[in-house]
Length: 360
Image (cartoon, rainbow, N blue to C red; front, side, top):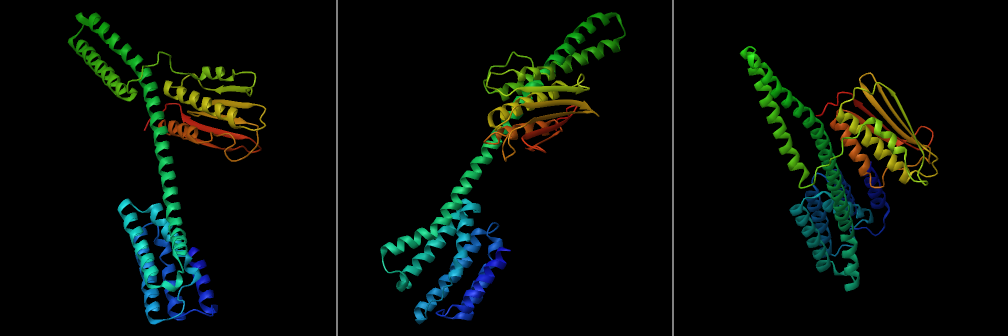
């Protein structure tokens, strides 16, 4: 569509502009160069060299032969190539392409002196040429910064989930080790196979506990371990508490919620907590928040909604990192999470997690 639009404008200007020199050639070249636009992301430096180099050759030849203006106003589309160079080009590629642009501009200033009447106009033309490139560099920097921050959020969420899994698993593994030790003592007079089995259980449990402690020691990076037990579904009721200025929260629990794995319970709690926090911060004209936790068909479903204004981002954090963290946590457990405007008004967050909490 972009190429079709550019080609149409070029043909119209080439056909009706009265002072255009080398009309057929200039129009044909401008049409041909329009087809570099689809390649501006994959090969930004190549299209810069082709487009600006071609235009420099034509302008230089026209200046030496004394031909009138051979540039079309529609050729301003080459500025999209300058934007793309700094937006998607790699470091050396962007530098080489920028050098080619400046070389072309310098050649035009030196050879085609009639188009520039003074130093001020030359600077203005250079700024007009480099502005799209600067804009592309700015957009690229912001996008990369956003990606890095999202990666950090995902990493923190993975670390927190790993810690919660460790705190739960370590408890059970410690129990296995103690039972194995007691079993070996009690089974001393029993057949040799029972003693050997208990020895294997004890050794495996001890190694698992040591490995888990080593892993979390790396993840915590010097942080002191939390002595609080992992949150459970029943603790969601505590989230209804708040100051006098907080939105009231109604929590409904239904279905089979008694056999949730600790990792799933922790995820359900964190998703509800983050969603309630976002609603209290960002929901406009809301009068309440509804939280529904239901266990059925081997899955647990979490729904958090408010009755505020329906607007983009109405119930999500302004940076979007809270939703990133919740989505990452649900995905790690083999579930899904969606957030968006509610069917009538407000903002709704829905999550579906397997009761087994399969971690990929």
